[in-house]
Amino acid sequence: MMVMGQTRKLLALLAFVLGIAIVPHRVCEREADAWFDGEPARVDALAAQVAEWTKTDLMPRDFVTGSSRFDGEWQFGTYMMAAMGFGQVVLERPERREESLARMERCLDMALSRDVRAFDTSAWSEDALDALDGPRGHAAYLGYAGVALGLHRNLRTSSHFSELHDRIVAALVRRLDAAPAGFLETYPGEVYPVDNAAVFAAIALHARALGRPVPAVFTRGLAALRDKGVDRTTGLLVQAVRFEDGSPRDRARASGTALAAYFLGFADEPMSSALHRALAKEQFRTVLGFGAMLEYAPGSSGRADIDSGPTPFGFGVSATGFALGTSRMHGDRETFSALYATAHLFGAPFDENGTRTHTTGGPLGDAILFAMMTAPQKGRIT
Image (cartoon, rainbow, N blue to C red):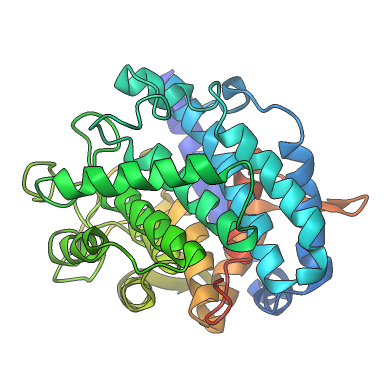
């Protein structure tokens, strides 16, 4: 098994080298401007494929990570990211409102279902929605669901989600207020600043939808994120911290930074912009015109994991994909175009019957790219 694993890694590296050497980057980035500008034909084709993925009940077994928890996370993440993409289409193209909202609501219903949240229930030995009156974190499940619900609430003020949305945000605010270092746990004993960025975005979107000021705990939480969650040397987000005092448990990394910058684009534009600038300055590289983000800061290295995805030559697949979203959010066309060339090369998009799917990504890959490549540009966030 070890030999087979090493062989697969070598083949992946060989494919990477041959791909960037043989395929001109301009061929792969020719659609980049269309995506950056939100060309309807491009967006509609990927939206149609994501709608196909999510109109059936995806199962954890559809995501083969080798871990039942991560399979469940990917199942939930597919519905959540798809919901964000459909909501973002409404922001840019009101004429697609009803169709996109119906698709978004299908995804929200599934993301909130007991079966889809089972991965989080297993980790905590309690159901996140049944235990909203309790004290325990559930930062990722409730935070990510809260972001998608918050975007929906800004598009449709009253719906069958409204009461649950209010309860989720109230629980997050109460738990943050009691958190010793200003961070909530994702799983028992595990605290990730990127997941807390989602919590802050959920709180901000809820306040905006209801026309209320953000609660004081939101401001304190952002301050904790800036003071304890951001590496002072690189400006990147630390991947993990301790619950008791917010001290680092992992290094600053690009995957968490890029996803946090996306979430914070809905909550605090200056901090989102600062994280994007750090990514562009410290992590962004081009190879023969193809752009990618290094997962670890220059001079540092580490192993690939479920957060980073594969890291050929140190470049992170997750960081590169999520940075498409931050680049579009902050009007960085040059970085977006170079990253898109890489996503196109290795995603291998395939068009058929009015849909577009990425051959190597499956449901989650298509959903993430849909959310990132429709990430709302400045001035269009609700």
